[in-house]
Length: 176
Image (cartoon, rainbow, N blue to C red; front, side, top):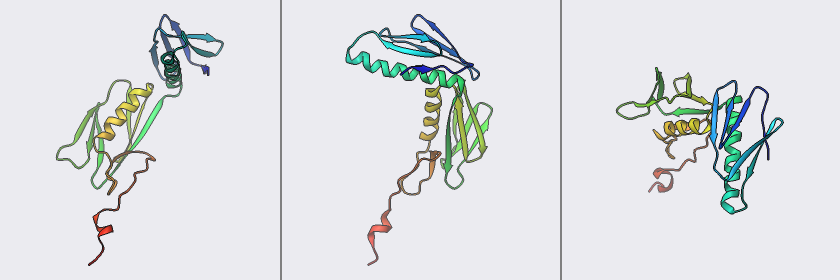
């Protein structure tokens, strides 16, 4: 599948590297020696130099990485998170994200460069950036600070994430 390059995005092909720049920023992808990229009009073709199983696997990986770089500099990526629980809240203090999620002290994260965090209110946060891997990694670190428990569903979860609930002790015991 070719990678479509939208208008406003420029792609530079160097030896072993694909550099993209657009309205949201710049990204570059280092290529494996078994992979090559060619530009045909407004599309990029990711080609494999070999027929082995590992080369075919790398083909799909690098096609996705190049596509994510093009989409990232054009549109960007975002992850939305919610805090569920009594007294759970989030604050942004400069470049530090401070979560109060039921521990004795707040959990503090340093926001990496290239990532922006916005807070619509004190129980929701939106992580945005051009690098899909960096956005997903930071959102996963924030979620890991207090993973939602299956009994009361308290914790940090992705927006729209379904938490499978467990019944608890009192449900199956019955009155005697």
